[in-house]
Image (tube, rainbow, N blue to C red; front, side, top):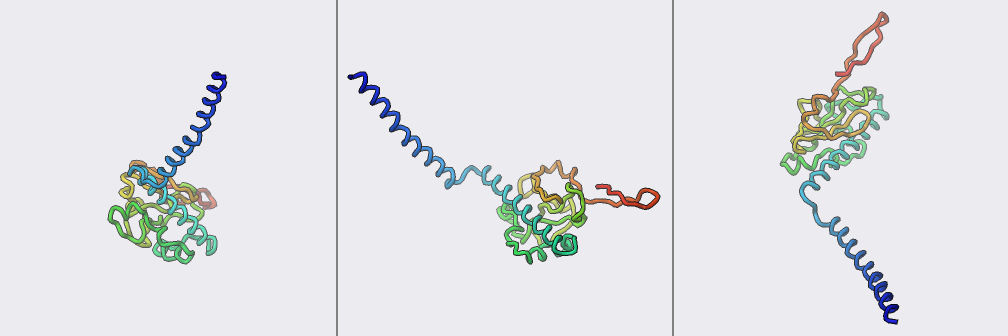
Length: 190
């Protein structure tokens, strides 16, 4: 009888430990959600948010082109024109830039050479210092917002996070080169 009651107590002890372990696990998960993580995690979250902003701005640029004449907005007015699409002005801001004291209205610039029919890997939007309706090329691009890294939106709508040393590999414009007897154009990427 003692042997049988000992087995029963062991099973009861094992069963009663399970709810305790579940409570401890749930507490750890809740703490992980509400307690701020290390600064590295906050930086990563800001990078992801910045990339999401670029992705959403890219969708708005496409809507503008599809609803209009098949072209992206005029580079000198692109921010103003996107606001007509109920884009929240917060979408133009990189949180990391704000934390570093750059209070510009927009931390993104448009590549004026990118057209709706440009190849997928041509830069469309990129990170820059604060301003509004900014446009240009690699001379405006900054990697200071994310300590040597930046988000880039490409013409196909995808966003990549690149390192400063990769900037030279980016494609900024398509050159039209006349070839052949009929004068047909071929695209060359610069």
